[in-house]
Image 1 (tube, helix red, strand yellow):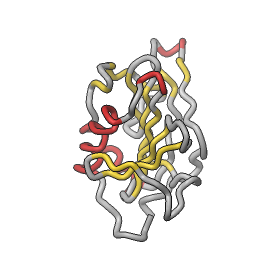
Image 2 (cartoon, helix red, strand yellow):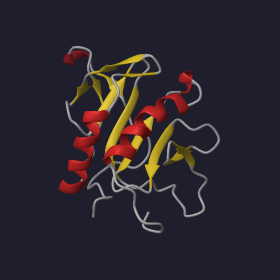
Image 3 (cartoon, one colour):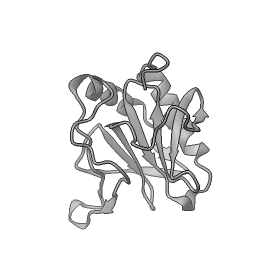
Length: 154
């Protein structure tokens, strides 16, 4: 199925500065099936060059399934597993037609898009404040490239 990523680590994305890669940041790459990977590659073509006035930075490894911006790093991973925290009655944040699951509930820094054929995870350090600005740009790209799932299939 499109919505699965084999071997993806559940929980928080670990983003590390990688000194030996010329300033690239390490962002763990999900391992989705081929159909999901193709959706993620199309999404990568639409991602903005800036988020929160922060320039896009290189990732290690270089993959269309991940992207990063700024310092502290804002990281995006496409093709991740459905979050374990998701429940049918979960309170989602909708930004430009894309539903996001915020985690943790009390002070979220991780947002995962829901109700789409590929799950997209975005980590936004608390220092950036409200996530709406960053999620708007990514939501526009998701809405354009990743089809919605029928109700009840996520």
